[in-house]
Amino acid sequence: MELTLIIIVGVLFAIISFACVLSVVVGLPGAWLILALALIIELTDTLYLEGVAQTFPWWMLIAGGVLATIGEILEFGAGALGAKHAGSSRRGMVGALIGGIVGALAGLPIPIPLVGSLIGAVIGTFLGAMVAELSHPDRTMPQTLRPATGATIGRVLGTLSKVPIAVAIWAALVVAAFWP
Image (cartoon, rainbow, N blue to C red; front, side, top):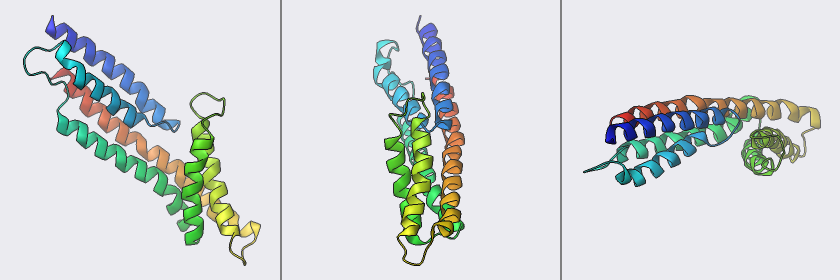
């Protein structure tokens, strides 16, 4: 009976957490959702495992948290780095960073399922870099387009860079789910 439950929990975890990996592409915190699901399973595994119950080693959950944090830093920092690469000032880089965060939050109510925050983050990054660059007295609107475009491309690439991190977290935890 215990082996059957381990397999059922492992398969369900693999399927649900894979959907979380796919959600990263549209800007959702899929890696964090995988870790939250794994933590819930870990805290409740005494209900179906006998003896010393441990579905996921704590060190693996902590390592997953560190990787997910690195993914978030990459995502938000990539917009600023894209702006810098495109010739933005420090102001433009900070504007891209702040605009991306504000845009992601503002995009949550967009009624397109799952992609509202991504749309908001991309638009926010562009507008944040543009507005910050326009705050320079010697900058004109056409001069702000290149840094704002660089910030936007960086933000999209940053979001996509989280996918391999989510896949690594998913793969490690799926393997652990079958070998408690």
